[in-house]
Image 1 (cartoon, rainbow, N blue to C red):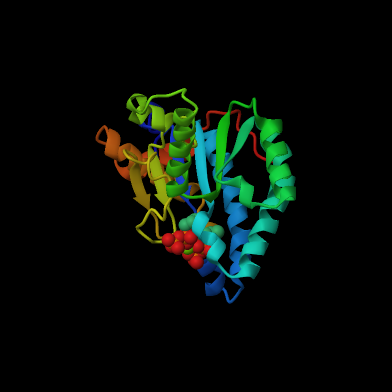
Image 2: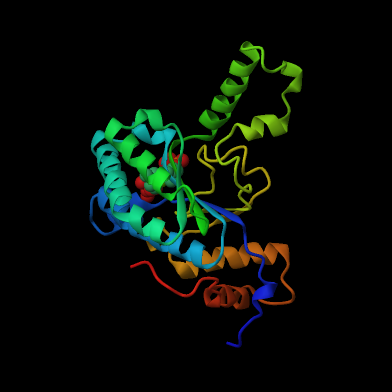
Length: 260
Ligand code: IPE
Ligand code: IPE
Ligand code: MG
């Protein structure tokens, strides 16, 4: 295929992903659900590398919802261990590739050990500029909005703010991710068509893309297909979605280096 001009692609600035389907991926292979989460962690690595190479500014990944605590105890504890191992293993690499890591959600519910690991990873990468990787852990859209409301209420109680001064912009400024552009593309893998209490406020104007692919199978081709679809919805310039998909796969804004 001839090279499609990169300038015809509308790249999203902020992509949010509901990484669903790990359990089914494992069950289809006769494995335990936790094996699916391990495979899912590999797909995370590829998605981060892809986003960075394509010049996406922010990537927000839903790793664990407020509701996921209700899963079987063994699954929850494997997920916690996995967070810990992945953080330990990947943070230096993220730093090397100039990725800023942020954990969004109610971190207070995690073990002291995990909270410390999260904080150290955030501190180490705080000044990086190539990509902001937000990991939503113990995150819920309801929690996020409630938390923002509580912060404003505290200011009112302290006499620093009048209720009449509360605007949508002020409330938005108290939410997670307020320092970044709002997500313009939401991808959900795993075939379900719901938002599962993800970024309820922040996704108000996002384009939604639903993929049947189970998260561990989500690769560059699938990521490019989602962006091509997004790009089509914006401006297609008479091109086909396949041409755009190929052009996205061919685009590399970095020097072409890979994660080691
Ligand atoms: C998403 O995969 C990962 C987490 C919620 C932690 P699931 O574990 O929900 O996989 P399915 O939906 O059961 O296949
Ligand atoms: C959403 O997936 C949460 C994450 C991907 C972390 P779930 O599998 O938990 O959502 P439901 O249960 O299908 O709504
Ligand atoms: Mg699921």
